[in-house]
Image (tube, rainbow, N blue to C red; front, side, top):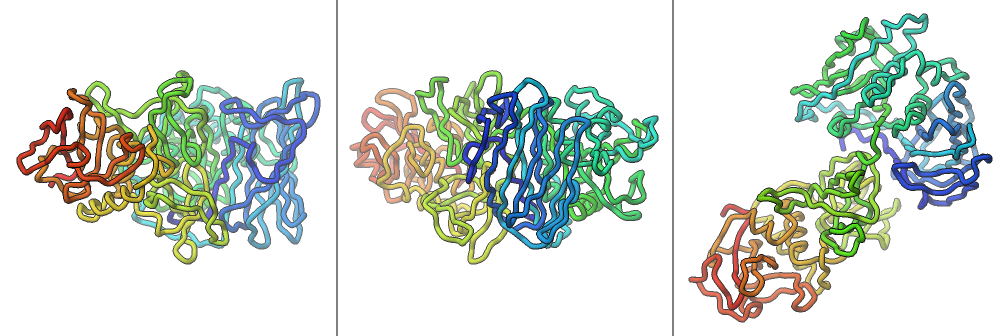
Length: 603
């Protein structure tokens, strides 16, 4: 990733954290939250260790709850403890501190040298007779020594604009109107989600009683959470990353710093800190905002030059922002190392597997999951597979640019030593940072991973000859593995799962099922088959496609089959007890089965 300077450690499930300690808490499931107190009359705490995938010298700890809970987060580094402040509406208090280890500066911890882990302790104090709650958390780790590099070519390729109504802080009839860009931006976003709350009321609720400011990042996000929203402070590394939120319908409250004339069109000549709402991009990739510094509500929509906005936000403020959503399921992603999708709510009939990095949609009303990268034929249209799963993950939006292409891809530790944990072939990952000796730091479904570049390929179609070779090479990796109905991973495949993985390893996404694959390809005859083309067969004396094989050349195929309950390479003649000759046409019979041939390549 260009300008990767910050990693967001997003938490919606606390149950598997390292060195976990707690008192008076229970783990709960989203969308309700992550952690809840057991006894509503007592204080609670939870502590754990976080190991960052990158060295860092700045930390932002954003932990949000509800209106019944005061939350205070502490971080300990080298036995030095810092408080990130305690928040409940109207009672927020930051706790700045300066030591040789570092400085807690209102809402950000700046360290004197780089570290790669910290201990976190979160205290929950009930404000009523109801149980205290942690909804979610995000821990931002930044290496501020990494220089920002201007990228003139990383342009957003899609025009999009969210429907937010502008609010001007300067039009408010209060003496401190020039100081409330953050509450005003928050008021705008709350209104977008149907929650009407004035900037003045929000200002009273989020004021930092220690510093006397209204723009404490942590407190503004915590207040949004008290309204039932899912909110956190984050740092984004590119406008491309920001566009992933906008496409999900999630506006971004961005923190800016700029000098005289560095952001043309701004109502402010310069600022050391100002908040605007990023709500879209025009066709040139320029940034459409709601800027509360405008003189009146009707003038708040301002489009800023992309390069200038990047400098003011990404370069100067490391992409610091508030992310606020009304639906935790907008962050739904496959669990690691995969989820199995079933056709029934009882989870008895498996249909397919969904790998890390694949896109899913979760319908909270029906509990159904759509596998957006796996298409099946419904009413003559290829539509996403739907089904049910035992558990899903929640992670921040990602932009996968590599595919795992080795069946035995292992994950490495921070010392670049191979662990016993694997990631499946066909998983999609986003490259974040080049490491030494042919390794990269990547993420997939929210999980940070160190992978060998030998196990990855850029996620784009290869040229035809290379792709055909890759398809066969991938399929042969599975030979002798057991057949697994519904399998589409390194841990087991069925016939169409083998075809899917073999093609996706070459950067070509094909439908999931055998019949859907046949529907989508170019028809061929036996004599025109090339390595990597597909062969289909029907049930006995029917037209129903129930099997797909990969043609490996010289009359042979590779298949995952119930015949041997395994993956094997075998001749077509032996498979069907039939002698295929040059006159055999597509759709002809071999014994009781009808055979079809096809290719996803035009030639």
